[in-house]
Length: 130
View (cartoon, rainbow, N blue to C red):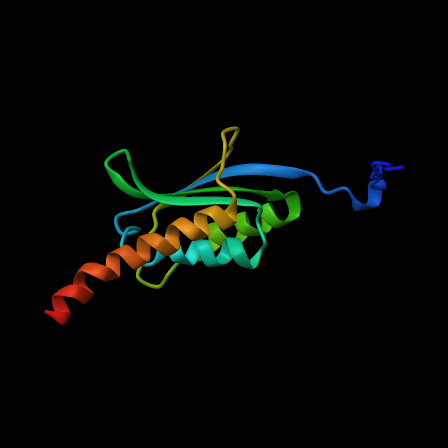
């Protein structure tokens, strides 16, 4: 006979999850390596879900990171992302808020990012070959 195992997680092994939206604003936050910087940070912390994209807020450049994971890891991401930046970035403010929407699984975001970077390289490569 087949039995479905019932998993029991004692209180000491339960880790609450949380989601955050972090918006980094400033006159120079695009094209300075912010997205790969945050991507590497998210993966180093093994966050479950992660997305990052360039945007604009109040007429100013912004980078938005959506993150989901174990509360302690998300808080670590928040601490690092709000206190450090890529060397060429000029940041004026960082907004942090709870987020309720869907966030892409980190592995899926990584796959899309890989294809996007490959696509960016193909056109210059073909021009070089011709």
